[in-house]
Amino acid sequence: MPKKMSVGIYLEEVPDIQHALTDSRESGFNTICCELLTKKYSLNELSGEEQNCEEPFGWFDMALPSADWNSSVVGVLSDVQEQTESHIFNVRTRASQLLEKQMGYAHHLGLPATILNLHPGDSCNLSRLIYSKVTTDGGYHSNVVVWMRLPMVHSKQTVNGAIDVGREESDDIQPISSWNTWNTFRTVGYAERRTFPVLDLPVDLPDQDEIDRWLGEPVKAIFISEESFISNQKGFPVLPKRTQHVIRSFFDIGAQVIMICKPEKSPNHYVHHKQYIEYIYGLYTSEWEEDPVRKYTKGYEDYLQSPLQPLMDNLEANTYEVFERDPTKYNLYQKAMAKALVFKIPEDQKDTKTLVVMVVGAGRGPLIRNCLAAADSVQRRIKIYAVEKNINAVCTLLHLKKHVWGDAVTVISCDMREWHPKEKADIIVSELLGSFGDNELSPECLDGAQTFLKEDGIMIPENYTSFISPIMSPKIHNDVRPFHDVNKHTNCNFETPYVVYMKNFYTIAKPKSLFVFCHPKSDAKESNDRYETVEFEASQDSVLSGFAGYFESLLFDDVLMSIHPRSHSLGMFSWFPIFFPIREPIQVKKGEKIKAHFWRCSSKHNVWYEWSVSEPAPVPIHNVNGRSYTIGL
Image (tube, rainbow, N blue to C red; front, side, top):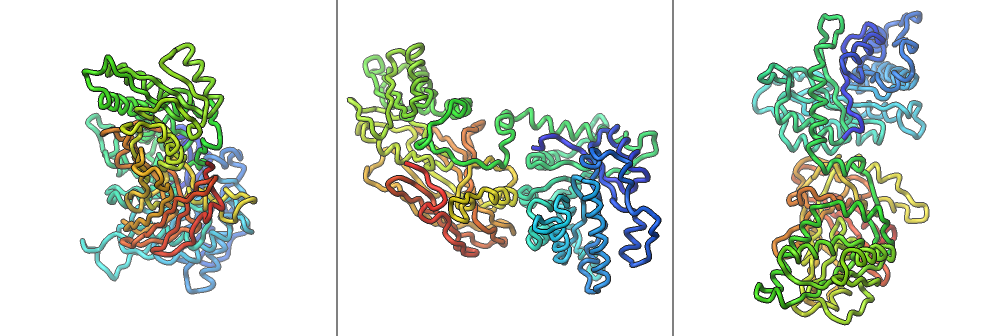
């Protein structure tokens, strides 16, 4: 979601910018969008007519303080795409000069953004002109941000904004995907963090796949007209249910709202729009208040994090505390434990039989509390060993043993792979899973722990499966670029997986299973190395940025714990998905096959993943021999 909600207003005519900004603010708008240069100047420049050198060509910069220019005014650039793509040299030159002048003045004023219309048809020269001005590699206006405005879908067959009069509209004519228009523009002029799409929301919304694809783009604003609203029973303006859902989805990726309004004749021209503004703010705040998980994930949206390496690094107290706040995860563990105890101890033996339970990787004891609570709930007797290698967490466990648990728990300060217990376990419980299931080395840890499990023993979790899904996310892919380490391979930033709470992304095809691990192993010598090939079919034209990774885990019996989108455990926030980037994005057409290759490799001291794509276009294997990223054993 946006850090701060903002509603702007798009103004066709602005006689006085100071009054316009004042009136808009009094009505509740945060920003105004208006033309940067005078219409007369822009038209004369495009037509080649001589300019009056004594007439100002744009707004008086002293009409507003710099703070207002910098935060509250978005400049609208002249619609010049048709001229920039002209075959006539002078026409192209004049359009280029006008664009240069407008962007130069936006730079001078320090505007937060500018708006330029983007139409279907040729835009290559326009893309180059914009890119050459805003790129950090020699661009004169590298601080200027350009919002490319286009409809969510083109409802008519148009070229550079002009309707093709040679064709009559019919039901057979399908809308042109405006996403393809945007994708061509941004691919030609790769301006990274300087050009962004902004969308006009149609009254009749397109299908959900089209909307979802736009949610994978870094959309900065949504334009809403008054015609999108309907009146409720009390006569107040509201949005239809589906439109509400769409707007909230764009809030999630940081998009702002810009109202397209017609001012009425009143002392304050925009006061009649207050009801619209209040309604939009209500949409924003209600969505936030209704979802408690949002409060935990706030600030982590699309934020790249390195996966934990708990075998190499001891977790700190605040990290433990964050994970311990997740009630869903521990409720599932407790439910699984209760089922396991009932399975192992029949009703007629509950007063005479005591089970040995080992919690390996006990941390600060949340699973121990779950085991004790589960035993109490089903009236079974257990004896617990808490095994933990982090000496700092062991101190916590000893405090809890002394003051809470007493003799019910024995604390073992040791790496589970090196411990030699005097008795074997009926049940081994662990919470060693990572975002990809096995990426925090649960298989390697539990291989060692399996040696002290009875032949008929149970391990919780019983199994876990990793899943991958091809995704499009220009934002996340661009955020990977700066993560370069001069001490590693040249492409190390794109050969490293990242844990990320993904919001601004599009799922090109549904996730499919990759690696499966079961415990206890039927063959203790079975290798944990893996290689799998997975094929997907693209549901729409898109750009492959990499792969999202998830996991499902069967704890015991039918107790499933999952971050897979189809089966995500409700309210659970302990794990964010993992992201495997590819070096260069791949253009993918609807129906094309995406063939992904993933390896899980190991050496004496490390485990790592390698990945590649062979279709629709081959790419080099990423992270060969763990040259950029490994997980330490």
